[in-house]
Image (cartoon, rainbow, N blue to C red; front, side):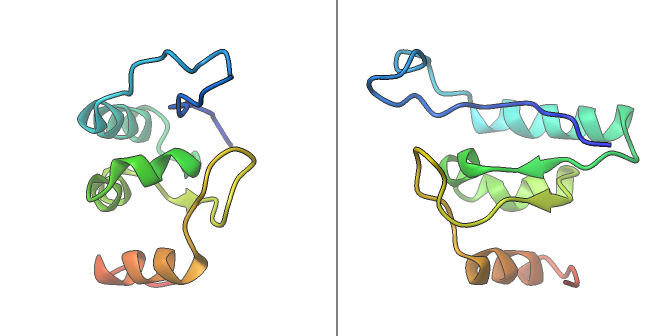
Length: 94
């Protein structure tokens, strides 16, 4: 089962350009709550995780179990290699 919670990146020229960025700790809390109430669902990282910085690793610990990788329509993403390295640094198997 897939569910979607979007932390959209404010990009100039879009309807969301004036949105305030969400605090990464709020994103982590949301991930943990979704994992708790939907233990069998996929929680997927998308392009916005680049803005999380070091918090991105904590998101995997909080319950993220899927990810989109590469570049996206409006933002630069991550590489498959960097995602693999992040997963392995946390001791998870691919």
